[in-house]
Image (cartoon, rainbow over all chains, first blue to last red; front, side, top):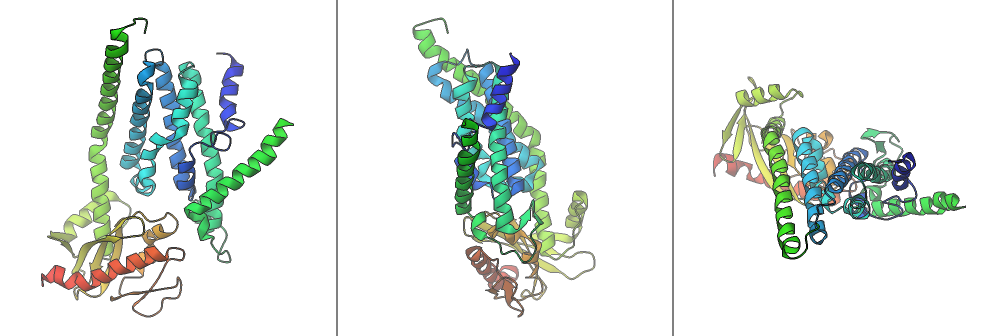
Length: 202
Length: 197
């Protein structure tokens, strides 16, 4: 593996090929779990784990998978890893499991996971696919953490559950509700595309 | 996948899918069985904590301590629990369920021996909006019911002062109303559940 390819594979999902603000994938969970930093972190760790390992596993199996049933195999492998995350949370972090509710199970339907498998893992070596999956998960994670930072701060005046802004601050309840997710995501995508990506193109 | 014809088209995919499915099921059921006891313990601990805190017991975080306190002070009856912590007064804890904004809210409601004064409330499960309705889990919210008698009236957050008033949660009016309904039902049904009237 050439070093250049590894670096490119790792950096692309963090910037110009970001799954959230460039490819606009995985939006359902972006809106649903970004109103508290703690929940967001656990959720994004689950997604990182799933994308990385399912990309790796399917890349290992890629020459044996009959192409006609590849989507079934992909879904099965993804579901296995998601169930592992779900069970691990249920057993070792029950409070968080209760809060995240159905969203952990919904990682199965996160387009980023299957998207990276279809677009990358089935054509590349396991090691590189693992890096691609991990980086895609990371690209998803940091965007969600930024959105969650603003939503929790503006919506509850606190960060990670600790009050930051004090009693003079009037909580913007809408930030915690689903519309707040739409607003923050749209503003974020707009700022990144207009400012950061345009600068990079010049 | 060099072979062509019937085997490659029909048999191989079937066998392959069968194998992958078997492996996946073995892994997930293995992990499930390995954590089963722990999960059940978590659930039991959660329920016991809810019963004890609804009865007004002060609890630490030590799980074995909670378990032994539960075993020494709670009598389980059909439909309710009788709790007597140490030499304290006898209290009654009744599980109640009701509709919240998004899903079911399940509670443990504790009563003093008069069956009208509340000793506490604990949330067993809820699916309200995190950061808004889910704040019913916060101690300040549940603690305001202790020592009060139903029926309750919810008032704007931070303004409750009369003995039947409780603070609502700002931004979660519907959840607060649902909670009030469940609590009022609890207050009116407590006698018939415990005395069997």
